[in-house]
Image 1 (cartoon, rainbow over the protein chains, first blue to last red):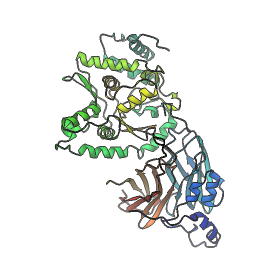
Image 2: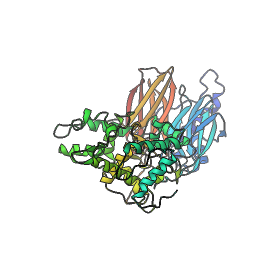
Image 3: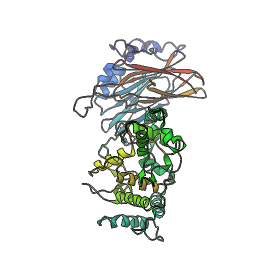
Length: 162
Length: 290
Length: 103
């Protein structure tokens, strides 16, 4: 029972930015969110292939993020094991449409990206792999803009032979 | 503090040092030919409770997570939906499935095998040896015409995970009958625990009695008190489940000592000793560890 | 065969908290086996949660998501007794889905 995924030519966010963003601000009566894609949204293959976090963010969203203290990133000081690092994000920003996680020191920086439709809380907890000590960057797309929070997480070799 | 002593004296002196360090002065240290497990257990518990006044007694079973706040947070988060969940479900299914001859594991254990984990290991007076849960499971299988399981992971880990889960919260209740063979097994386990071995010249005590809460490279060392209560465990390092057998073997190899066979006499006696001195602490298995 | 997806969805007032744990190797394609051969990449790419025919959460995952992946989120507008459909597709085209009842 397999589902086929449509073409990966363009990411949803790039398409939205080009077509929808400008039109948004004139329509106060409608939901102040970009039109949200349906369940079988194209998988952002290109973004996952980027190495550097900056390039991955650009590929996924088409713009850069501003650091914001309204994005709260929760990650350990020292990962107990780089294979399973619990990381979560919450934010007080409104009109959040997307939350993504990047691990700068991984071979490909983009780890996970989540679509937040209207009615879904702007908070995600997940468990990521980290190859080495590096920054974890959380990006929150809210009201068409990008906000970020960064934290360094130390990753070490296990002591008992690890 | 260095123990540069002959093997016979080392365990006794280690115990005296530990007892003295814990302020237990009144009792005379047990002489080698008259073991006093009850006094040992009391001194053992006292040592850790004194060393870590901020740790609740039942929390010691959480190993490194009772010792370090940053690690504890990660563990609490993982326990919300723990990685051993799949093994637990598999174990429950396996436990209920009859053998080819129609019998089940329930036929081999008291109370149908439910809520009995806290009684293992026990001393089998007929066979004159220590029987662990893992050993009992394989003996059950063999008695019913089934092939034994590997002791270290997979099905054995799933089954022991399920059986431990049915005893979660129950205090460990290991018994040492008034039988010189049982006492000898207990003493052998204690000897093994305190004896240095291998290239790194570590004994179990070097890390788990002298240095709990400290780092061995990147690991936070667990206290020996209650160290088996969470078994079997899902270790991130293994990306899977492992049993008490697995951990004894891998710990020996990782400290560059020659590991014994799973369920060897020394390992079973070691499990007997470690479990007895942790009596009263709750079974918390299955567990998750780094 | 038992589902690879375990879901817990609990309604708390008008917010439903959802946790999912999925059995999947999430092989990155960077790891070699004991013989030195690369273990091919094998990971979930998309995970979708639907309530009343509406998508309430989508995860786009890469191989940097941990093995036996876990995710937690919350959404409004559902009640106890409602159904939540969870489905995933991986890079090999395999998939699985489950429908859970909100507690």
